[in-house]
Amino acid sequence: MPDVPYATRDSAGILIAENTGLPSPENRWVVEAEPFLTIGGVSAAPPAQFTVVTQAARFGDGRLVVLESETSELRFFDAEGQHLRTTGGRGEGPGEFHYASTFVRLPGDILLVEAIDRYISFASNGDYLSEWRIDSADLVARKRAACGPSALLADGSRFHCALGRPEVGDRWGSRLVAQLLRATSDGTEVSLGFYVGADEGVLFSSGTWVASGGSPMIVAIVNNPEYSVEVWSPEGRLMRIIRRVYGRRAPTDREVEAAMEMAMRPPPMGPAPARPEIPDLVPASLGLTVGSQGDIWVRRAPMRGMQDESVFDAFDPEGRFRGEGRFDGYFWLYEVGDDYLLGARLDEMGVPHIQLHRLVRRST
Image 1 (cartoon, rainbow, N blue to C red):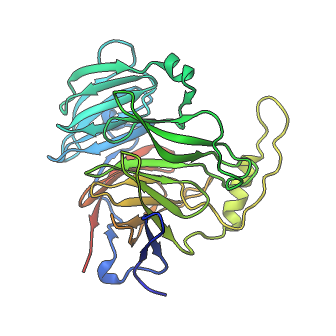
Image 2 (spheres, rainbow, N blue to C red):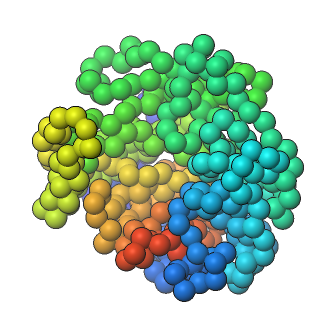
């Protein structure tokens, strides 16, 4: 099989990148297994002890900011991992928030925190700047709803779902399907395809993943279980579809056992769950990240109930498969820079450790 993607244009003028092989050694991106910086752990100083981290970012000068959701705090660290400052905190006052799901970094290194219906902005040093709220009643009146735990895109715009099943035939069977919309600050909405929910009757089933980033910004979407990544412009133009042929695999016996045990746990109230169907292949994506250069990282493992290894497929901005990034244990990816990956690894006690790994982007 060829070791480079095959690209063509279909009748609609959309670039299709089909990856049927592996990159050659000189074109394979390399993620160093050992981190060059780690922050956290039960023996760390209190500001570096994390419970639930929902986002992190690295500034150009090497400083880091970590969103600790459990305490509703932004914690700032220098390039060596030493604590500098903590801002935020639980509350409704200026600079305070509850249940923050994420933040994005806007031009000028402004941090925009999403906390349910509130959006709070901070300077890169942690100073509070301003905030605004979305009109939840207006969204309900217009039959708009959240598609997931976070609605924030990299440029500060939001995405949501239009209620009511669109005309999509039987492509996704009985799964929840909604039109995915990007909303700007002036109220303009553009379509970004579809949001598809998980199939509760199938083990390992995962719904749509949405990620954004790069300059200019792109929006990447995966509608599981197929290995097909849609790349959209913010204006609603489908620019590219990335596929990895034979990229999906069969679940292992251990994965089936762990996932089935979780699926069959009786709920506190109500009837016992029905035994789900075991699929021949696992879903393509269990997470999605867009890097600084418009590169796309598809999280492949671990499956539900497993924490032995985390695997990510890397694609360059043209959709060429550039190899895998592998991490011991459970690792969640927050940010991909030009030469680093920033994420959190859970230790054996489930405590997050913020880690930076070097990335070498090889290309001939």
